[in-house]
Image (cartoon, rainbow, N blue to C red; front, side, top):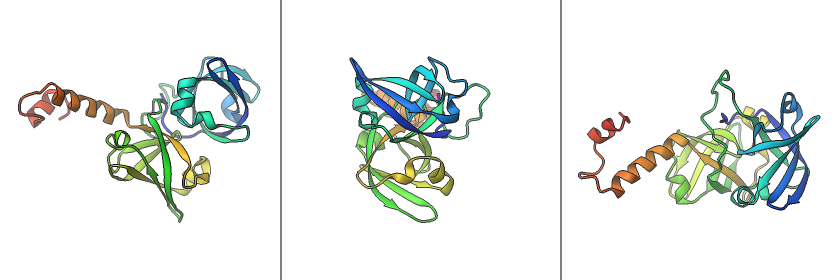
Amino acid sequence: MFTGIVQHVGAIRAVRDTSDGARLTIDSGPLSDGLERGDSVAVNGACLTACECSGQTAAFDVVSETLKCTTLGGFRPGAKVNLERAMTLSDGLDGHIVQGHVDATAAVRRVDRGQTWTLEFQASGELTDLMVPKGSVAVDGVSLTLVNVSRDRFSVALIPTTLAETTLEGLSPGDRVNIETDVIGKYVVAFLRRMIEQGSGGGVTLDKLREAGFL
């Protein structure tokens, strides 16, 4: 589990094809301290397992499904990536609950630069159905607050600290990013869909939401 608070911007050192995907070697800087084989690290929002640690670098095996469903398949040496180690029980939850399970990718539609930046993304309805204004979303592993949400797009605001400490400042229209929607929203939507599919008489009511523990 992660929080979406980026701890270090690392750099891809090497990309090597394997029989089932690729091996990424990443300069993880201070995050390398105490990092051991088997530890989890979110790389641009995708939870990966360290398979080899040496000095300030760590290697991660990425299976073909992950390469296909995220932006990791387009990584090249020199690319900058957002890194976060898995949280421990003693850590504070400064962002929101992030699993490191990327739902899909979205494309940058517009970048409005100012003291506070606004990024707008083009996304599928399957993604935006799980979003609400002022709710949380992880973009390339960064915990952000949603500003506007419509059927095929959504926007987020970025403060200077976020721009300075993540890779998001380098985004341009057309770039693709990894998106993970709020896990709580997923459970709510899944529950409501089951109620509808099961044909529960009267549809969704306040009493039924209370019985399910939502109220």
